[in-house]
Length: 193
Picture 1: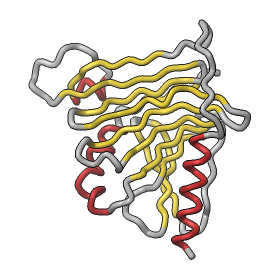
Picture 2: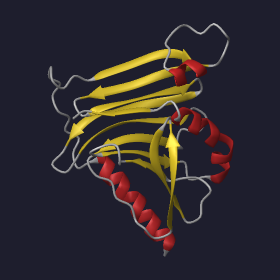
Picture 3: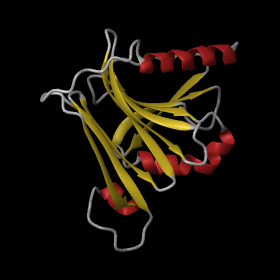
């Protein structure tokens, strides 16, 4: 029963994020879509310094997406890929995001999303407060898993920024979870008023 509930909850979350249509608003001067990719070192990624790397640290791609609702910025290291999900508006929602994954495991993805609403099933759910790059968040863990299913940032925003974990594998998380958290510790979220 818990497994069925979990499958339904995850399906509903995916449906909510996908929206009900593929219609994308026309780009206007007030709704400028910006995509920016810059190469930076690991330390520079965290400090926000875009100067050239001179100390031989691994390089990252600084990925950002901005639209009229806000922006998401994070740094993806070499060996990882990303996809920008451009702003779209439906009758029920407005959303945009950045999804990233390790090149060696393309089906195991982490998605940072902005949406007008977010809901979860409370069955088997435990939550824990945490900080990501000095932002207060709440992680949700289903069915006693040692890794989170989502992180929700909502107290400091009118709407919701969420990080969704589609890496349902404890082995994968043991190998890559530390690097995922390092990536998330470069995360900068901004909501426009």
